Length: 344
Image (cartoon, rainbow, N blue to C red):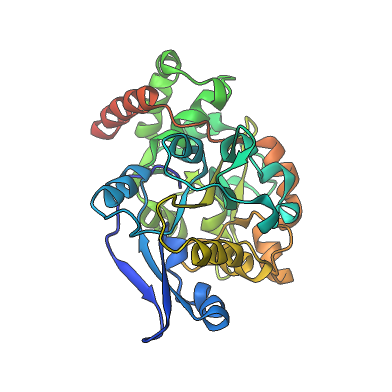
């Protein structure tokens, strides 16, 4: 999900009229689920006003058009936390007020959240940009190589998620390039592969259209998406997902408190709720998309855990790689290459 290309300007107010206090949250669409904040509002009397976005740059545009103090909590791509904290956007968070001990150790990513010993964010949810597939066509053992995407039998059967970072980085992994080491010069290495992938594609599209292509049987697999395609499709048990042999990419979303928030106490209460066992479970199974809760204490039921393959979290985190920190120059070069890819 990270640094995606569309922005929703819909604002969802999850509130009861005449509540004494409101906290404003800028977040991805999984926070638009009305069921997510109901227990928080009932317990605290604080309503939650959510504006959804997808691309961090779009969120920054929203902030630039807002007045200081308009927003209290930012749910932001983990890869962008450090950069924005260094720009002075976030207030420090007291580790003693956060359930850090409940988090999966592999999901902490303190290098993104802690600067000179000061914490500015906490991860709340993560997942994998890898491969989801129809097991009736590709088998059920979960072993897939990136190189299989170019097999003649899949020509016209591949759905490609229109999000350049995970696709390009995974093509780099096919050549043994670690995502953290990927640079502009490596774009030449994966260029021919990227264009060959376009020739294999049935569709290059957004979350919904590429999911629909696999669900409807128009495509046999989708590259760039994973657990949210298969986890909730109880009526389509043949859908599966895997981390390919070469490794995959895992995305992560984090919570931070705006430095200029006028309601920091309410903002912290919201963060604490979202990191609570109940908040984590509701967020993990939000209607927009499912994902892994950052907290191992999330009160998911056995079926939800099985659908998310909860028991495999540690091994999957070890096999995949997190998104590297945002690099503006590399991003611009990726966009240029991806634009050429889309035009073919």
